[in-house]
Image (cartoon, rainbow, N blue to C red; front, side):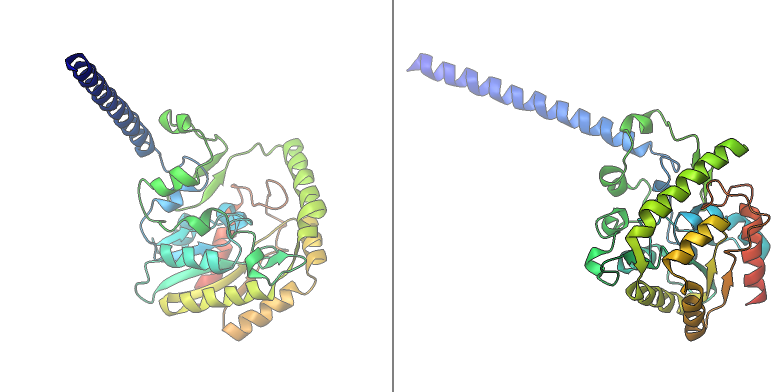
Length: 317
């Protein structure tokens, strides 16, 4: 019996030692992992930084066209402000709907009545599944990033890094990032791609092919999304002035958008009139504008477009 008890004691001691060592190892790994996450910089990818800033007073809203095409710094300078922030994402993540509105409400400081809100519109961010465009259960953003990002104002934002960051944590540790994508502290996404004619022509050809052969076949106008645009406007109006803007695109992209919805401009103008909103249509104002791919405004032309929007705001106080 004594030997048996000794064996039992030895086993118990070894088990406790194993558990202790395992716990210390796991704690060390967890600590190192946490330190890696805390090293995440603003530009870890094209989205992260927007979720690490405090709540914002004035917002630019829309998809990647707005994210790349409107620089808050330029508009702020033109209007003598310092509070405009670009909270635009992509056509997949931030079309107008309940998901985007909830995220906007989480990001907005809901203070005062002097904010400005630039809501960019196009047939795609007010479009949805072609077969059931008004079925909100089928909205494309329902299971994506903004749907699960209940915290959009923390630095570091562990929720994003643990659940929605798609890169390698090694890149965070080494502070590696995409050399072509630079998310600025004001939310503007600066895209630095080659702008020689051959590169632009190839990207444009690929982008137009994607829209004509895939995107155009997927989307139709959604009265439900237009209604959510209205709800977004109604939320923002008490806090300042709301402006609708349709950004410039290439002539070829305009042709594709006309195929998607020939009445889009009429619909938006009627909506703007009903909601008593100033509406600036720059879609065809593309003579002096360079595009990276026929769809997104090149960074060299961003100041031009941003100043046009600022001038419109200045003329419609």
